[in-house]
Image 1 (cartoon, protein in one colour):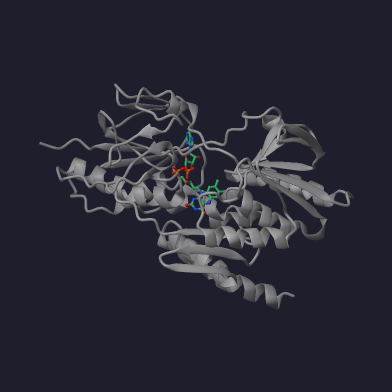
Image 2: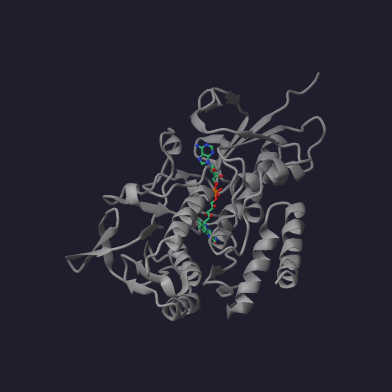
Length: 397
Ligand SMILES: Cc1cc2nc3c(=O)[nH]c(=O)nc-3n(C[C@H](O)[C@H](O)[C@H](O)COP(=O)(O)OP(=O)(O)OC[C@H]3O[C@@H](n4cnc5c(N)ncnc54)[C@H](O)[C@@H]3O)c2cc1C
């Protein structure tokens, strides 16, 4: 009797979904058990978001940080399907795509990440620039170019949120705009990088100060206009002129995830067990930014690439185990530390007993991310380019 082939459908090809697909394809399936693996994403390419800032400074190119899925999944047996997920019928075990395709599944992986909420403040949807996707980076690049080509003496930029993205963007863009840039970094709490280790926070403060970035703490955004931003500090509203507002605050799950009749936390994330399965639905796994997960040591898992990447390994293993009658493993998160870019040729890192800033940290961060890029083939192509590019640039001067 021939066994029926199981189908694993993975929704979202980011840090959670793509790395789960790649890992699943490497596991030791017996030929009779080999499942069909389908990866669905609305985009045709993966995005290595920790390096997205480098597109704006020209330090890196799109192909390096956003390789096409078709290239990454070559020879893996994983089928890629470019489509928007429109709905999931949990009872029928079926995914509905916006193009009309229906995808029945035996195992489902939810890895659709999050979205930047722009509707928190009046005018933000119309006038603020989010910074999460490659399309966001291209749109911001276009605006920056227009401003650089204008005859304005100064370019006034307001960045909302002094978390990682806000601080990293402020430093990179200050380096790009040089003397013409005027930056304000606006933060609602009383300090920047609230959750970071002291060493990284201090390094960031120094980097921002040396670039002349003005920091507004304990400040709310009242509204954003076409070329103004209204800031509220100690109950007083001050409206200032700006050329560009970048919004980096908040993450929320998409509507398609929110509408699922599964257990969600207050932020809309889906609650999982330690084995990364969805409560009452052992056939569904959830990971990355959309999952609310506490690991085997009781640690609440942060919404970071580092966490999603580690969860992908366990998700793949546990799917394999569930289809081959083996015990599933509880997720164990290892906090490896934190790295931040602080401008061109500058970074800071704290982790694994090491504290480093300046150009050594910049190099270490680059190498760590090179190692984390998906597939050995892509790592080699990018690594080779990083070695050869400076030589070509020197020769062509
Ligand atoms: C600018 C920036 C810098 C960052 N830097 C760091 C860092 O230095 N270190 C760190 O650890 N983390 C960092 N993060 C956070 C990190 O990127 C996320 O935590 C991580 O990407 C989460 O992985 P994920 O798989 O849950 O979601 P994602 O990687 O966001 O992947 C989700 C995927 O789902 C797809 N998708 C969404 N909705 C649909 C739909 N309806 N239909 C089809 N496809 C859909 C998207 O196209 C996307 O490919 C950064 C994030 C940003 C935005």
